[in-house]
Length: 621
Image 1 (spheres, rainbow, N blue to C red):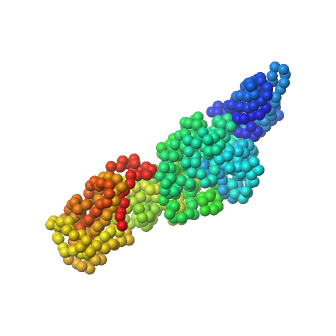
Image 2: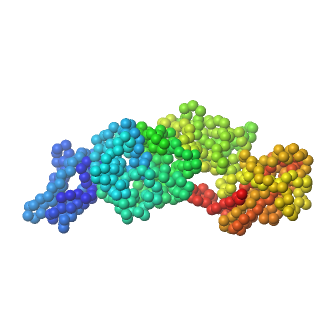
Image 3: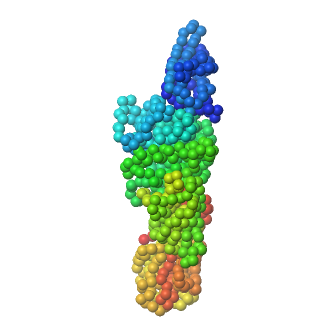
C-alpha cells in the first residue's frame, strides 16, 4: 500500500475556513475493499477516527477523503484496507499537522542564496516539502535543487548539498506566521534561480515536471491541492530591454492562470520588489522598470501586495543576505496576514498615493509633494532624508536641495520653476544601489518607484541637443519676408552639441551683436507614417519649415526661451524628413532653441503602460 498524493509523513495539511483538514488521498494497493483510518494524538485515539471508513480500494488503486481533523496536531494516522477474505494492507503515517500551506516560487532570491550562518533557527511546527518530495522540519536550504525530483530542476538522486549558501525568506516567513497565528505552517518549495517569466509561462503546464510551472502544479496536487497563498520573488532575469516592457502583462497572466489552476480566484499573493544590485549602470533602466511595474501590480490585481527590499543588505552582488532574508520573510508574513485576515492582522506595505507640484513658493520655485499611504506613525530618516531624484531622458537632474518629512508626506524643495518639470519624472530609489533611508516608525521602507511624470505624460523624443547650425546670416527683422533658403548648403552648417537640453548658441550671437539670423537643422526618419508635433521653445523671432513647407512663424518671440512653447502639428510619411528653424537674434539677446518631437494619437493608458510604445522619429546623423 503506497500513497501517491494527499497525505505523507510530517506533512502540513491545509486547513479549511472551519479550521479542519479536508484532503483527498490517492494511492496504490493490492487488495479491494474499504479504506479505514485510525487517528491518534498524544497516543490516544480520536473519537470518530477509530477505523473510520474514508474511501475504497478497487483494481489496484484507492481513493479516500480525510476530513475533520482540527488545526494543530501532531497526528499519527493509520490507513488500512480489509478485503472479504480478511486479508489486510496497512500504512502508518506520523507527525502530521493541520495548518496553513504556502507555495514559494520565483528565482534565486526566493530559492535562497544568503549565507547559511545567518539561517533562522528551525521550529518543529514549521515544515517544508523539499524538492525531493519529502516533508520535514523546514531548515535552509529548503530548495534542495541538487536532488530535486522534477527534471526541470536538474537534480540527481545522489546530488550533493553545496553548503555555505541557501537562506531564503521561507523559513523566517513560516516562523513569523506561526508566532502571529499559533498555527503550524507548511512551505512547498518551487523556486529556481536564474529563471525568467517565459520559463514560468503557464502555457508550459502540460510539460509537467519538465517545466517550472508544471513542476509547481505537480507538487501542489501531490499535497492535496489546497494552499493558503503564494510567495513570489522574481524579476532579476527580466530586466533586459527585450523582456522588461512585458513584465506586467506576463505577471498578470501568471497570477490569473495560477489562481485558476489552484482553484481559487482570490488566492493571496505576496511579491518581493527587486532590491539593490551591484551591477553595471547600463542595466539600471530595466531594473528600475521592473521595480516600478512590481509596485503597481497591486493597483490592478486584487489580493496582491508587494513588499519593499531596497534597504536590505546583500551577501553578493545580487542576492539578499541571509540576515536580511529573515527580515524579508517577516515582512512578507506581515503583508500576507493583512491579506488573509482582511486587514485585522499584519500590515499593508507603504504605497505611493499621490505626487503633486506646489507652485506657491514666494520665489516662484516648485515644491514637489509626495504623499504615501499605509504609513505607521510618521515617516522618518536616519540623518538627511535621501532617495528621491528628478530625472530627464538623460538621467538625474540635481534640482532637489532639501527633503522634508511631515507625517506621511515628503516635501521636496527644488531650485526650479514649474516649466522645468514639464518633461521630467520623479523617482525613489533611482539606479541600482541607491542611498534610500526613509522608513515609517515600524522600520518599513518606502517602495522604489518611478518614473512618475511630473508634467503631462507624452511620447516624445529627448530634447535635441546636437544639430547642424549655420553661420550668422544677415538680419531679417521679424522674419516676415524670410523664405526657405534657395541653397541651404551655402549657409555654412556645422555640427554643434550643447551640454544640456537647450541648443545654446548665445556666445556666437552675443559676440556678433546687432540683428542676424541663425538656422538650426536636423534630419529625422520615420519607420512608419506618423502624426507628430514639433515642440519648440525660442527667445527670438522664429520661422520653421518641415520638408521645405513653412509650418510656423512667430515674429513676437523673445526672452526667455520656454520649453515646448509652441506645438506645431504635422503628418510625416514613412521615410526621411528635414526640420529647419530660423531664429532672429533679437538684437543679440537671443540664445537658442529647445526642440523635440512628440508622437500624437497615443492614449493616456498606453502612455502609462510599461509595454513598448509606438516608435518615435529617429534622428539622423
